[in-house]
Structure formats: structure tokens, C-alpha cells
Image (cartoon, rainbow, N blue to C red; front, side, top):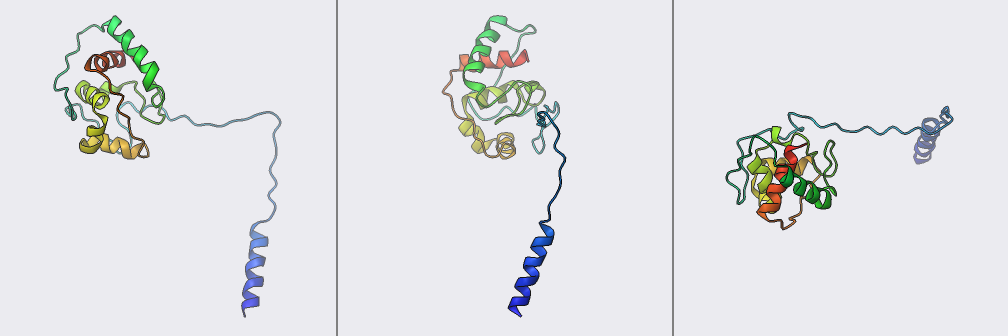
Length: 158
């Protein structure tokens, strides 16, 4: 009886692993789908402009006009330390930054920059983002509030 089962199993494998013929096209083709930024909300992560996050920042007031000098300092800082995980207009290891203030309050953004460890432990949105981005934690870059404010100003320009 065992021999019959072995023969049947091997027969099924041979039949199911039959040769597939694929047409090969000349030239090089690469299909890589980009995930575009969703302006309103990421899957499973709520949009909450009232959540200020966990950290030292309790209030941020933006001027009507972007402070170009502060934004330039923020862009330099972003290009130095943030681009390892974040891109402006598409997902990477972390979320895209374009339109961040349509999803998060300025206080939340600055608290995430200054206190990522505390935010990931206590803030519900940070926890949801952690889950969505395969538990890739945001590292504490030990930035000053001045650096965080410059980054916040730069993010306004995106």
C-alpha cells in the first residue's frame, strides 16, 4: 500500500511540475510598482490633527509665510539624517513626508522627531505606523528643539 501511495505522489508531482513555455521578449523590462502617497490616510493609520503626541512640544504656531532660512536649515538636516528612511513623495522604510500636516499636527511631528521612543511606546498613531511599517522603529537622533523646528518648517514646503 505504501508503494502505491509513493508512486501516486511522484506521479502527481511529475504532472503538476510540467514544463511551462514562456515567451521571452528581447530587451530589458522591469516592472516595479511605486506606492504613491495617500494624501488622506495610510492603511490602518488614522488621520488625527488634534493629537499632539508625547513629548516636550505642546504648542507650535506657524507664521503665514514659510521662514525660508529656517526651512533651508531644515532641508539640510533632512537630507543629512532623514533620507535614510524617508522620501518626500513616496513610502520607504518610513512614511513619505509630503503632506504630513494634512495627516498630523505640527506638535505631533515635532514630538515624533524629538521623542520617537516615547511616542512609539505610548502614542496610538505612532504605534499604528510602527505596525504598518513592519516594526521599523524611528531612531532617536538626539536633535535639539531648534533642529526639530527647522525640520518642521521644511516639511511645510513639501
